[in-house]
Image 1 (cartoon, helix red, strand yellow):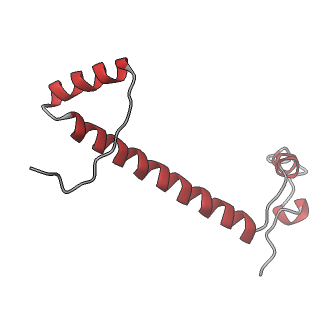
Image 2 (cartoon, one colour):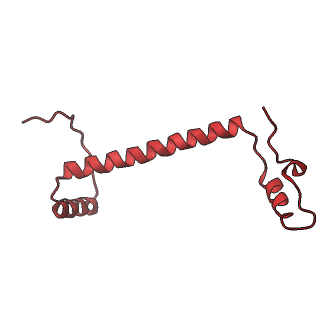
Image 3 (cartoon, one colour):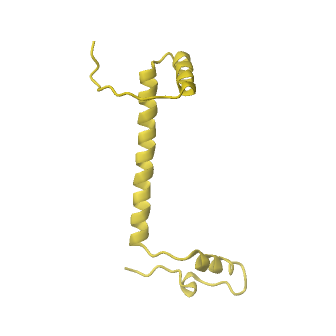
Length: 96
């Protein structure tokens, strides 16, 4: 019986193989099933991470940014008699 999915070869360390076989036995699953699930999960997570990173970069490019020094300087005024507004601190986003 042939598989509908193409095969690939991967080399694992001896420890990984031992752990994988132990996990396969505990879950009553094949190595192939475990590897496929692990790779699918990894790719899903990494693709989502990269999409979030792209969105963050796009946000930075589209919206104003402020230095940490100016933000922390503004924060140090919080709760004092000289508390500074966002606008006075130069941190208010200008309308587009």
